[in-house]
Image 1: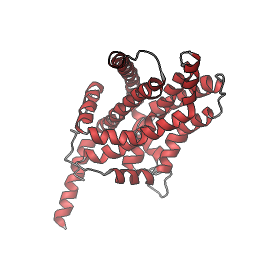
Image 2 (image 1 turned 90 degrees about the vertical axis):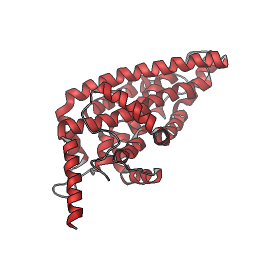
Image 3 (image 1 turned 180 degrees about the vertical axis):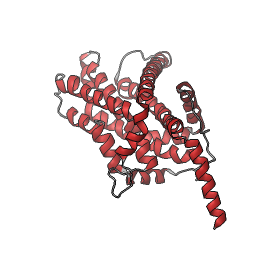
Image 4 (image 1 turned 135 degrees about the horizontal axis):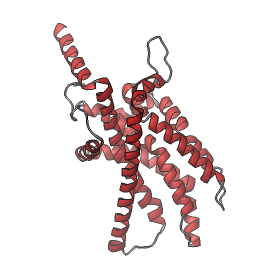
Length: 294
């Protein structure tokens, strides 16, 4: 690993610069970005379809707007967004340092830390509880599960994501364990508190700006694709394929973009508060000196 030779310049950036750089990264690494994004998005998409896909079919048959399906779909995508980016984070961490990790190696690395990912994303951030609740919903009418308990899970997850947004990076790139097994070892919770604690205000503003940009991008892409479908396919009605593929697909596209934004924000946070660029240069020089001594 070439610690002082990176594909992305290691320096401080504003949020606008990060949003712009994310587009450049996606353009330069389009195929790896698309592959790693789809590796999690496709399974999550299938799970969501099995959980709530029937809601859209029922509303369309009755000629009603599928509000129930749309509500649950957006909440699920929001909850699952951090989980959907784990392959992307696992790939781009090494890729920054001039490495070219294979997807098989990325999958093996993920498997090694899967218990931590399951606990932090599945339980603490509410994905598994949300799936469990949606298995209990009534087939014929909306229930408090969908309009009270599920939003409460989203609020809890939002608090976690504002205060601890870079948990995936800590698990996948820094490889901290769930529990410290020996004196001096830093657990995920300890590392997370150390990394995020001093920057809560900045992280909150960053989250607010990201939400606004994300909502704008979703509305823009969804409207643009609907217009294209109308003119190119003469398809202006709300139908099954739009509900099950077009609109969720737009949501996952935005999630894929923000997986890169969040990774770049993680790099920026380490630079601002830990002097990461200096640390990398010193570690690279230490490696070179040790090689000469041998």
